[in-house]
Amino acid sequence: MIETAPRMSRVKPSPSVMASRRARELKAAGRDVIQLTSGDPDFPTPDHIKEAAIRALERNQTRYTNVDGMPELKEAIQHKFKTENGLDYSRDRIMVGTGAKQIIYNALMASVGPEDEVIIPAPYWVSYPDMVKLAAGTPVIVACPQNNGFKLRPEDLDDAITPRTKWLILNSPCNPSGAVYEPRELEALAEVLGRHPHVGVITDDIYEYLLFDGAECRTIAAVAPELQERTLTVNGVSKAYAMTGWRIGYAGGPAPLIKAMTAIQSQSTSSPSSIGQAAAVEALNGPKDFLRERLTLLRERRDLIVGLLNKAPGLSCGSPQGAIYVYPSCAGVIGKKAPGGEVIGSDGDFTLYLLDHADVAVVQGEAYGLSRHLRIEFSGKTENLRVAGERIIAACAALR
Ligand SMILES: Cc1ncc(COP(=O)(O)O)c(C=O)c1O
Image (cartoon, rainbow, N blue to C red; front, top):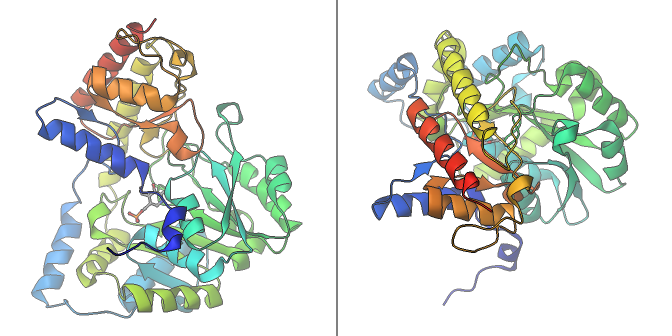
Protein backbone atom coordinates (compact mmCIF):
# COMPACT_ATOMS: atom_id res chain seq x y z
CA MET A 1 0.00 0.00 0.00
CA ILE A 2 1.43 3.34 -1.08
CA GLU A 3 0.80 6.08 1.46
CA THR A 4 -0.02 9.49 0.08
CA ALA A 5 2.25 12.42 0.82
CA PRO A 6 1.53 14.75 3.75
CA ARG A 7 0.64 17.54 1.30
CA MET A 8 -2.43 15.55 0.31
CA SER A 9 -4.00 16.33 3.68
CA ARG A 10 -4.09 19.95 2.55
CA VAL A 11 -6.16 19.45 -0.62
CA LYS A 12 -9.57 18.14 -1.52
CA PRO A 13 -10.97 17.22 -4.93
CA SER A 14 -12.86 19.99 -6.72
CA PRO A 15 -16.45 20.07 -5.32
CA SER A 16 -17.96 21.01 -8.68
CA VAL A 17 -16.23 18.04 -10.31
CA MET A 18 -17.56 15.82 -7.48
CA ALA A 19 -21.10 17.22 -7.87
CA SER A 20 -20.97 16.62 -11.63
CA ARG A 21 -19.78 13.06 -11.06
CA ARG A 22 -22.61 12.31 -8.59
CA ALA A 23 -25.15 13.71 -11.03
CA ARG A 24 -23.72 11.56 -13.83
CA GLU A 25 -23.90 8.46 -11.62
CA LEU A 26 -27.56 9.12 -10.86
CA LYS A 27 -28.24 9.68 -14.56
CA ALA A 28 -26.50 6.41 -15.40
CA ALA A 29 -28.79 4.74 -12.84
CA GLY A 30 -31.75 5.96 -14.89
CA ARG A 31 -32.71 9.15 -13.06
CA ASP A 32 -33.69 12.18 -15.11
CA VAL A 33 -31.19 14.52 -13.44
CA ILE A 34 -30.66 18.00 -14.89
CA GLN A 35 -27.07 18.88 -14.31
CA LEU A 36 -26.25 22.55 -13.72
CA THR A 37 -22.89 21.96 -12.09
CA SER A 38 -20.19 22.27 -14.72
CA GLY A 39 -18.14 25.25 -15.85
CA ASP A 40 -18.35 24.33 -19.48
CA PRO A 41 -20.11 26.74 -21.85
CA ASP A 42 -22.66 24.56 -23.64
CA PHE A 43 -21.57 25.46 -27.18
CA PRO A 44 -19.36 23.74 -29.73
CA THR A 45 -15.94 25.17 -30.63
CA PRO A 46 -16.53 27.39 -33.71
CA ASP A 47 -15.82 25.71 -37.06
CA HIS A 48 -13.04 28.07 -38.17
CA ILE A 49 -11.09 27.11 -35.02
CA LYS A 50 -11.67 23.38 -35.52
CA GLU A 51 -10.53 23.76 -39.15
CA ALA A 52 -7.28 25.41 -38.03
CA ALA A 53 -6.62 22.38 -35.81
CA ILE A 54 -7.32 20.01 -38.71
CA ARG A 55 -4.90 21.96 -40.91
CA ALA A 56 -2.26 21.71 -38.17
CA LEU A 57 -2.73 17.95 -38.07
CA GLU A 58 -2.47 17.72 -41.85
CA ARG A 59 0.79 19.68 -41.67
CA ASN A 60 2.01 17.15 -39.08
CA GLN A 61 2.27 19.87 -36.50
CA THR A 62 2.27 17.11 -33.93
CA ARG A 63 5.51 17.55 -32.04
CA TYR A 64 6.61 19.26 -28.85
CA THR A 65 6.70 23.02 -29.15
CA ASN A 66 8.68 25.47 -27.03
CA VAL A 67 7.78 24.82 -23.40
CA ASP A 68 6.34 28.33 -22.98
CA GLY A 69 4.32 28.15 -26.21
CA MET A 70 4.95 28.33 -29.94
CA PRO A 71 6.05 31.70 -31.36
CA GLU A 72 2.90 32.24 -33.49
CA LEU A 73 0.70 31.82 -30.43
CA LYS A 74 2.83 34.09 -28.27
CA GLU A 75 2.64 36.68 -31.03
CA ALA A 76 -1.17 36.36 -31.14
CA ILE A 77 -1.33 36.73 -27.35
CA GLN A 78 0.96 39.75 -27.40
CA HIS A 79 -1.29 41.34 -30.02
CA LYS A 80 -4.43 40.48 -28.05
CA PHE A 81 -3.06 42.01 -24.85
CA LYS A 82 -2.02 45.14 -26.74
CA THR A 83 -5.11 45.75 -28.83
CA GLU A 84 -7.83 44.53 -26.47
CA ASN A 85 -6.41 45.28 -23.04
CA GLY A 86 -3.93 48.09 -23.70
CA LEU A 87 -1.16 46.00 -22.13
CA ASP A 88 2.34 45.82 -23.54
CA TYR A 89 4.02 42.49 -22.86
CA SER A 90 7.23 41.51 -24.62
CA ARG A 91 7.43 37.82 -25.63
CA ASP A 92 9.66 36.94 -22.67
CA ARG A 93 6.85 38.11 -20.40
CA ILE A 94 4.24 35.81 -21.94
CA MET A 95 3.74 32.09 -21.48
CA VAL A 96 1.25 29.48 -22.63
CA GLY A 97 0.12 26.58 -20.45
CA THR A 98 -2.29 23.67 -20.40
CA GLY A 99 -5.24 25.85 -19.40
CA ALA A 100 -5.45 28.93 -17.20
CA LYS A 101 -5.60 26.43 -14.36
CA GLN A 102 -2.06 25.23 -14.99
CA ILE A 103 -0.88 28.81 -15.44
CA ILE A 104 -2.22 29.79 -12.00
CA TYR A 105 -0.82 26.60 -10.47
CA ASN A 106 2.60 27.31 -12.00
CA ALA A 107 2.51 30.88 -10.69
CA LEU A 108 1.65 29.83 -7.14
CA MET A 109 4.16 26.99 -7.12
CA ALA A 110 6.83 29.33 -8.47
CA SER A 111 6.26 32.09 -5.92
CA VAL A 112 4.52 30.90 -2.75
CA GLY A 113 6.20 29.21 0.21
CA PRO A 114 5.29 28.28 3.79
CA GLU A 115 5.67 31.85 5.01
CA ASP A 116 3.35 33.34 2.43
CA GLU A 117 -0.29 34.37 2.48
CA VAL A 118 -2.55 34.76 -0.54
CA ILE A 119 -5.68 36.89 -0.29
CA ILE A 120 -8.69 35.30 -1.97
CA PRO A 121 -12.01 37.19 -2.07
CA ALA A 122 -14.97 34.85 -1.43
CA PRO A 123 -16.94 33.57 -3.20
CA TYR A 124 -13.98 32.25 -5.16
CA TRP A 125 -13.19 29.70 -7.84
CA VAL A 126 -12.75 26.47 -5.90
CA SER A 127 -9.21 25.79 -7.05
CA TYR A 128 -7.50 28.92 -5.71
CA PRO A 129 -7.30 27.98 -2.00
CA ASP A 130 -6.27 24.40 -2.67
CA MET A 131 -3.55 25.47 -5.09
CA VAL A 132 -2.21 27.90 -2.48
CA LYS A 133 -2.20 25.06 0.06
CA LEU A 134 -0.43 22.73 -2.38
CA ALA A 135 2.25 25.41 -2.65
CA ALA A 136 2.43 25.25 1.20
CA GLY A 137 1.10 28.81 1.55
CA THR A 138 -1.87 30.08 3.55
CA PRO A 139 -5.06 31.21 1.81
CA VAL A 140 -6.57 34.28 3.49
CA ILE A 141 -10.25 34.31 2.63
CA VAL A 142 -12.02 37.67 2.63
CA ALA A 143 -15.83 37.49 2.62
CA CYS A 144 -17.46 39.59 -0.11
CA PRO A 145 -21.17 39.15 0.60
CA GLN A 146 -24.04 39.86 -1.73
CA ASN A 147 -24.66 43.31 -0.23
CA ASN A 148 -21.16 44.29 -1.43
CA GLY A 149 -22.07 43.01 -4.90
CA PHE A 150 -19.82 39.99 -4.15
CA LYS A 151 -16.83 42.31 -4.66
CA LEU A 152 -13.78 43.04 -2.55
CA ARG A 153 -13.95 46.44 -0.86
CA PRO A 154 -10.71 48.44 -0.56
CA GLU A 155 -11.01 48.62 3.22
CA ASP A 156 -11.38 44.85 3.47
CA LEU A 157 -8.32 44.40 1.26
CA ASP A 158 -6.35 46.79 3.44
CA ASP A 159 -7.36 44.89 6.59
CA ALA A 160 -6.35 41.54 5.09
CA ILE A 161 -2.84 42.58 4.01
CA THR A 162 0.01 41.58 6.34
CA PRO A 163 3.80 41.62 5.86
CA ARG A 164 3.41 37.99 4.71
CA THR A 165 0.92 38.73 1.91
CA LYS A 166 2.33 37.61 -1.42
CA TRP A 167 -0.64 37.87 -3.75
CA LEU A 168 -4.18 39.07 -4.12
CA ILE A 169 -6.17 36.90 -6.55
CA LEU A 170 -8.83 38.78 -8.51
CA ASN A 171 -11.34 37.13 -10.82
CA SER A 172 -13.63 39.31 -12.91
CA PRO A 173 -16.13 38.30 -14.24
CA CYS A 174 -16.23 36.02 -11.23
CA ASN A 175 -16.92 32.32 -10.99
CA PRO A 176 -19.27 31.75 -9.12
CA SER A 177 -20.93 35.15 -8.54
CA GLY A 178 -20.75 36.64 -12.05
CA ALA A 179 -19.65 39.95 -10.48
CA VAL A 180 -17.68 42.28 -12.76
CA TYR A 181 -15.40 44.94 -11.26
CA GLU A 182 -15.84 48.43 -12.64
CA PRO A 183 -12.70 50.44 -13.47
CA ARG A 184 -13.24 52.77 -10.50
CA GLU A 185 -13.47 49.76 -8.19
CA LEU A 186 -10.20 48.41 -9.56
CA GLU A 187 -8.63 51.87 -9.13
CA ALA A 188 -9.68 51.87 -5.48
CA LEU A 189 -8.09 48.44 -4.94
CA ALA A 190 -4.97 49.61 -6.81
CA GLU A 191 -4.72 52.58 -4.49
CA VAL A 192 -4.57 50.24 -1.49
CA LEU A 193 -1.99 48.07 -3.27
CA GLY A 194 0.02 51.22 -3.97
CA ARG A 195 0.60 51.44 -0.21
CA HIS A 196 1.76 47.80 -0.04
CA PRO A 197 4.46 47.34 -2.65
CA HIS A 198 5.23 43.77 -1.55
CA VAL A 199 1.80 42.50 -2.72
CA GLY A 200 1.33 41.19 -6.26
CA VAL A 201 -1.93 40.57 -8.14
CA ILE A 202 -2.95 37.47 -10.04
CA THR A 203 -5.91 38.52 -12.16
CA ASP A 204 -7.89 35.68 -13.70
CA ASP A 205 -9.70 37.14 -16.71
CA ILE A 206 -10.89 33.84 -18.20
CA TYR A 207 -14.53 35.04 -18.49
CA GLU A 208 -13.48 38.36 -20.06
CA TYR A 209 -15.81 38.17 -23.06
CA LEU A 210 -18.83 36.71 -21.28
CA LEU A 211 -20.51 39.98 -20.33
CA PHE A 212 -24.10 41.22 -20.31
CA ASP A 213 -26.07 44.46 -20.08
CA GLY A 214 -23.25 46.57 -21.53
CA ALA A 215 -20.83 45.61 -18.73
CA GLU A 216 -17.16 46.16 -19.55
CA CYS A 217 -14.30 44.05 -18.34
CA ARG A 218 -11.09 45.93 -17.59
CA THR A 219 -8.03 44.23 -16.20
CA ILE A 220 -6.21 45.75 -13.25
CA ALA A 221 -2.81 46.26 -14.91
CA ALA A 222 -4.53 48.34 -17.61
CA VAL A 223 -6.49 50.42 -15.10
CA ALA A 224 -3.44 50.90 -12.85
CA PRO A 225 -0.33 50.62 -15.08
CA GLU A 226 1.89 51.21 -12.04
CA LEU A 227 0.90 47.68 -10.95
CA GLN A 228 1.91 45.96 -14.18
CA GLU A 229 5.33 44.94 -12.87
CA ARG A 230 3.67 43.01 -10.02
CA THR A 231 0.63 41.69 -11.85
CA LEU A 232 0.14 38.35 -13.57
CA THR A 233 -2.64 38.75 -16.13
CA VAL A 234 -4.15 35.31 -16.75
CA ASN A 235 -6.48 34.40 -19.57
CA GLY A 236 -7.25 31.51 -21.91
CA VAL A 237 -9.44 30.27 -24.71
CA SER A 238 -11.62 27.85 -22.70
CA LYS A 239 -14.68 29.93 -21.97
CA ALA A 240 -15.06 32.56 -24.70
CA TYR A 241 -14.32 30.18 -27.53
CA ALA A 242 -15.95 27.10 -25.96
CA MET A 243 -12.59 25.32 -25.96
CA THR A 244 -12.44 23.82 -22.47
CA GLY A 245 -11.21 20.48 -23.80
CA TRP A 246 -8.37 21.95 -25.84
CA ARG A 247 -6.53 23.01 -22.68
CA ILE A 248 -4.85 26.27 -23.63
CA GLY A 249 -4.35 29.15 -21.20
CA TYR A 250 -1.81 31.95 -21.08
CA ALA A 251 -0.48 34.83 -19.04
CA GLY A 252 1.55 38.00 -19.21
CA GLY A 253 3.63 38.97 -16.22
CA PRO A 254 7.03 40.01 -14.85
CA ALA A 255 9.85 38.27 -16.77
CA PRO A 256 11.47 36.54 -13.73
CA LEU A 257 8.11 35.07 -12.68
CA ILE A 258 7.34 33.87 -16.22
CA LYS A 259 10.79 32.29 -16.35
CA ALA A 260 10.20 30.45 -13.06
CA MET A 261 6.74 29.32 -14.17
CA THR A 262 8.23 28.03 -17.43
CA ALA A 263 10.85 26.07 -15.45
CA ILE A 264 8.09 24.36 -13.46
CA GLN A 265 6.17 23.57 -16.63
CA SER A 266 9.33 22.22 -18.29
CA GLN A 267 9.73 19.71 -15.45
CA SER A 268 6.07 18.75 -15.18
CA THR A 269 4.05 18.77 -18.40
CA SER A 270 6.33 20.41 -21.02
CA SER A 271 4.73 22.28 -23.86
CA PRO A 272 0.93 22.48 -24.14
CA SER A 273 -0.70 20.46 -26.94
CA SER A 274 0.61 21.54 -30.36
CA ILE A 275 -2.83 21.08 -31.95
CA GLY A 276 -4.49 23.03 -29.16
CA GLN A 277 -2.02 25.85 -29.68
CA ALA A 278 -2.68 25.95 -33.43
CA ALA A 279 -6.40 26.20 -32.68
CA ALA A 280 -5.76 28.94 -30.11
CA VAL A 281 -3.88 31.04 -32.70
CA GLU A 282 -6.99 30.97 -34.88
CA ALA A 283 -9.24 31.67 -31.88
CA LEU A 284 -7.28 34.80 -30.97
CA ASN A 285 -6.67 36.08 -34.50
CA GLY A 286 -9.86 34.91 -36.21
CA PRO A 287 -13.40 36.34 -36.36
CA LYS A 288 -15.33 36.84 -33.15
CA ASP A 289 -18.77 37.56 -34.55
CA PHE A 290 -20.07 34.16 -33.37
CA LEU A 291 -19.84 35.56 -29.84
CA ARG A 292 -22.64 38.10 -30.30
CA GLU A 293 -25.26 35.43 -30.95
CA ARG A 294 -23.99 33.25 -28.12
CA LEU A 295 -24.05 36.15 -25.68
CA THR A 296 -27.64 36.96 -26.63
CA LEU A 297 -28.61 33.36 -25.96
CA LEU A 298 -26.70 33.33 -22.67
CA ARG A 299 -28.40 36.53 -21.56
CA GLU A 300 -31.83 35.04 -22.34
CA ARG A 301 -30.92 31.94 -20.34
CA ARG A 302 -29.64 34.04 -17.45
CA ASP A 303 -32.89 36.05 -17.41
CA LEU A 304 -34.96 32.87 -17.55
CA ILE A 305 -33.23 31.22 -14.59
CA VAL A 306 -33.09 34.44 -12.52
CA GLY A 307 -36.83 34.94 -13.07
CA LEU A 308 -37.67 31.36 -12.09
CA LEU A 309 -35.40 31.32 -9.03
CA ASN A 310 -36.99 34.48 -7.71
CA LYS A 311 -40.34 32.69 -7.78
CA ALA A 312 -39.02 29.92 -5.50
CA PRO A 313 -40.01 30.54 -1.87
CA GLY A 314 -36.85 31.06 0.19
CA LEU A 315 -34.50 31.83 -2.72
CA SER A 316 -33.41 35.23 -3.97
CA CYS A 317 -31.27 35.77 -7.00
CA GLY A 318 -29.54 38.83 -8.45
CA SER A 319 -28.75 39.20 -12.12
CA PRO A 320 -25.02 38.72 -12.75
CA GLN A 321 -23.23 40.88 -15.30
CA GLY A 322 -20.82 38.22 -16.49
CA ALA A 323 -19.73 34.56 -16.69
CA ILE A 324 -22.20 31.66 -16.87
CA TYR A 325 -23.40 31.24 -13.29
CA VAL A 326 -26.02 32.64 -10.94
CA TYR A 327 -25.32 32.57 -7.22
CA PRO A 328 -28.70 32.86 -5.49
CA SER A 329 -29.10 33.11 -1.74
CA CYS A 330 -30.85 30.13 -0.18
CA ALA A 331 -30.86 31.64 3.33
CA GLY A 332 -34.68 31.55 3.28
CA VAL A 333 -34.87 27.75 3.09
CA ILE A 334 -32.37 27.06 5.87
CA GLY A 335 -34.16 25.71 8.94
CA LYS A 336 -37.18 24.49 6.95
CA LYS A 337 -38.34 20.87 6.86
CA ALA A 338 -38.53 18.65 3.79
CA PRO A 339 -41.69 16.51 3.24
CA GLY A 340 -39.73 13.50 4.55
CA GLY A 341 -39.07 15.36 7.82
CA GLU A 342 -35.39 16.13 7.32
CA VAL A 343 -34.33 19.64 8.27
CA ILE A 344 -32.43 21.74 5.73
CA GLY A 345 -29.58 22.87 7.96
CA SER A 346 -27.17 24.23 5.36
CA ASP A 347 -26.74 25.00 1.67
CA GLY A 348 -25.14 21.54 1.38
CA ASP A 349 -28.32 19.92 2.75
CA PHE A 350 -30.39 21.97 0.33
CA THR A 351 -28.24 20.89 -2.61
CA LEU A 352 -28.73 17.24 -1.62
CA TYR A 353 -32.46 17.84 -1.22
CA LEU A 354 -32.65 19.30 -4.74
CA LEU A 355 -30.73 16.36 -6.15
CA ASP A 356 -32.77 13.70 -4.33
CA HIS A 357 -36.25 15.28 -4.55
CA ALA A 358 -36.12 17.49 -7.62
CA ASP A 359 -33.50 15.74 -9.80
CA VAL A 360 -31.57 18.97 -10.19
CA ALA A 361 -27.82 19.06 -9.55
CA VAL A 362 -26.27 22.37 -8.43
CA VAL A 363 -23.27 23.13 -6.20
CA GLN A 364 -23.49 24.40 -2.62
CA GLY A 365 -22.11 27.89 -1.94
CA GLU A 366 -19.99 26.50 0.87
CA ALA A 367 -17.67 25.08 -1.81
CA TYR A 368 -16.96 28.64 -2.98
CA GLY A 369 -16.28 30.01 0.47
CA LEU A 370 -19.58 31.86 0.91
CA SER A 371 -22.39 29.77 2.35
CA ARG A 372 -26.16 30.03 2.19
CA HIS A 373 -25.86 30.29 -1.58
CA LEU A 374 -25.96 27.92 -4.54
CA ARG A 375 -24.05 28.06 -7.79
CA ILE A 376 -26.20 27.31 -10.81
CA GLU A 377 -24.65 27.20 -14.26
CA PHE A 378 -26.99 28.63 -16.90
CA SER A 379 -25.23 28.06 -20.23
CA GLY A 380 -27.14 24.82 -20.96
CA LYS A 381 -30.20 24.21 -23.11
CA THR A 382 -33.06 26.66 -22.51
CA GLU A 383 -35.65 23.92 -22.07
CA ASN A 384 -33.53 22.13 -19.44
CA LEU A 385 -33.14 25.38 -17.54
CA ARG A 386 -36.87 25.99 -17.62
CA VAL A 387 -37.64 22.51 -16.30
CA ALA A 388 -34.89 22.78 -13.66
CA GLY A 389 -36.24 26.16 -12.51
CA GLU A 390 -39.77 24.77 -12.25
CA ARG A 391 -38.55 21.75 -10.31
CA ILE A 392 -36.67 24.03 -7.91
CA ILE A 393 -39.79 26.16 -7.38
CA ALA A 394 -41.86 23.04 -6.59
CA ALA A 395 -39.15 21.67 -4.27
CA CYS A 396 -38.95 24.97 -2.36
CA ALA A 397 -42.73 25.19 -2.13
CA ALA A 398 -42.81 21.71 -0.57
CA LEU A 399 -40.61 22.84 2.36
CA ARG A 400 -42.32 23.76 5.62
C1 LIG B 1 -12.31 31.32 -12.65
C2 LIG B 1 -11.71 30.24 -13.47
N1 LIG B 1 -10.41 30.30 -13.76
C3 LIG B 1 -9.81 29.35 -14.49
C4 LIG B 1 -10.53 28.27 -14.95
C5 LIG B 1 -9.80 27.19 -15.73
O1 LIG B 1 -9.68 27.52 -17.04
P1 LIG B 1 -8.89 26.58 -18.06
O2 LIG B 1 -9.88 25.72 -18.73
O3 LIG B 1 -8.23 27.56 -19.00
O4 LIG B 1 -7.90 25.82 -17.26
C6 LIG B 1 -11.89 28.15 -14.67
C7 LIG B 1 -12.64 26.97 -15.12
O5 LIG B 1 -13.71 26.66 -14.66
C8 LIG B 1 -12.49 29.18 -13.91
O6 LIG B 1 -13.80 29.13 -13.62
